[in-house]
Length: 566
Image 1: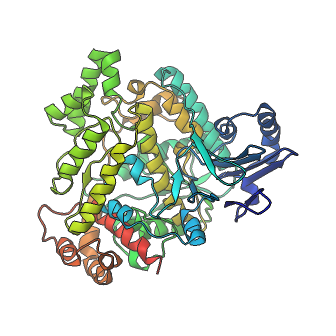
Image 2: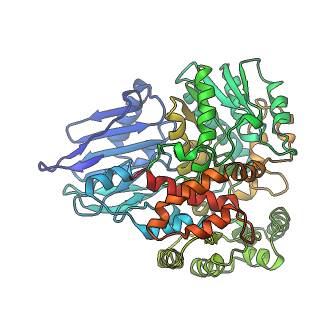
Image 3: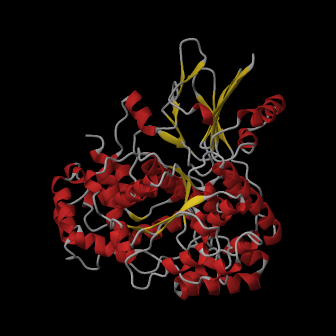
């Protein structure tokens, strides 16, 4: 935490791993860098001193380090601080005057006696999401996040001056040039992360993302324990593709768990003490994560690799189509037809989207009109990071009104309509969720490594023209192009994707008695955000249309988090 004191000099205090910390001090300035990767300090001191001499930006400084870093720099002009671009390592601000900065909003709330923001909690009940900018806000009154990659400047008296950045490259690279950059950054990330320990593990799900990481570990001659499983669906072909990949990897230890032995969603979560500091949408699946982490720990694994963030980075969204229509109309129409077929967009919605119709405010209003309808059709495409937004039937009327007003208030905030801005919102959301998953693994002594969300990897992808690698006719086309000579082409020949929905529905049915007992004493009901009787009907499958798992997951996330405040 960063705080001012009576001398006017800022104090930086907290708990950290010295191996992941670099501190430099000169007569006129002080610098502290926190990373999620062990730092070989001698490797970075010369470059960091050169940065100090050049008086560079914090964006430039962060680019010198692997992984995701938090930076504090103090000099005569005050303090500048910056969290990681994908919000794997976040920063938060307390209200002025005498600003506090911390990697934990909850810690600031405890220090300043901040009150809960129940309107923000009501928004967290909406599903499958709300607005990109709103999802990143805290659930505490007066405590604001510093958006990922943004530099906050605080003067010597502790008053926030301004925000700057992040400085991102313009998306101008071709697939060929972008693939070279992406390959280099992902190789460097995996190499730096795998150098931290000898006892490595890696998910080999059969999907493109985790399998790619496994081959990169093999590229560096790293032995690792492969973890494989699947889901309960009869159509699940993850094990086939995992076996296909492992047959082409060097022989090594493998942990395979039959899907029937894996904890189902909604299992055991009432007994789990949340190790995260804000509502976590994966709460209903925490028991599954803990089960995997314990299996890895018994096998001696300390650092485990996963493909987390790969979907969000390599598939992102289609918000570039309106700008592509201006640059290359024929290609835009071709892509629009491809995406419409893939996502089953209605023709009018696809045409409206491709033409770039509808402002940020209009899009919010259109989503709010549908929010209470319980409509579960395909979401309308939009270039804005908005929705789709639905309110679960068990939200009280007052909660729906409060959430709608908070969401509507976002219309007053200016918003960049560029593809890069929209993509960054998606990646930040993925980073926040993944950091909560990492906290679950960390509670069992496992450091989860997620190279796809490292800042350098993300920047290399965002430097490409989106139409070059977001091709509806060739999903995740960046991976086979960038991994030539490392990952066999057969790995990328898969054209199926497992969803896990069978597990979600079976898990709800199996754990229904425990869920109903859990919500008999609901904190959400106590504060007037949900109607427990309607929620009971939902748990008993008595509502129409049937409840989607994500609706329950979002509610359980808030309920479980509130209980940690007891």
